[in-house]
Length: 129
Image: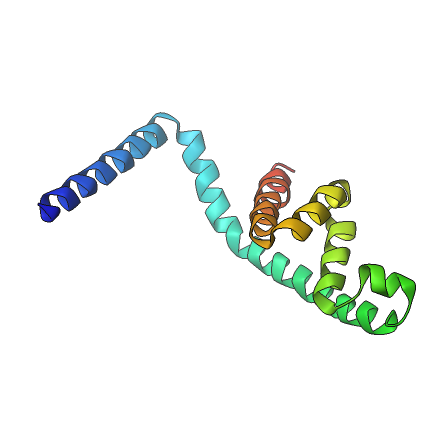
């Protein structure tokens, strides 16, 4: 019954992994790129941590300095809102409109979009340079 079904699912997973291994053997350049990305992950994580620290401290400063001002009510209402504004304007100026629309609609979709932007534009595209 259920045990046989789980075994079948396990076998199908192994078959998928074997296909991936076969592709990697046929295209060794792809394996080199994947290995380079795994080695570069530590540097990327450290850089993103540093970027987060800079955005956080600047966001705290802007949120406290602009408290009571019109610009503070619009862009720096709270520390998370200030961080969001600084990140969008500083890191992704071309994506300002879509990111503001998404964050106002659904935070989970915004997170998915943000992860995609980080992976696509910051990590992979900067590895090409």
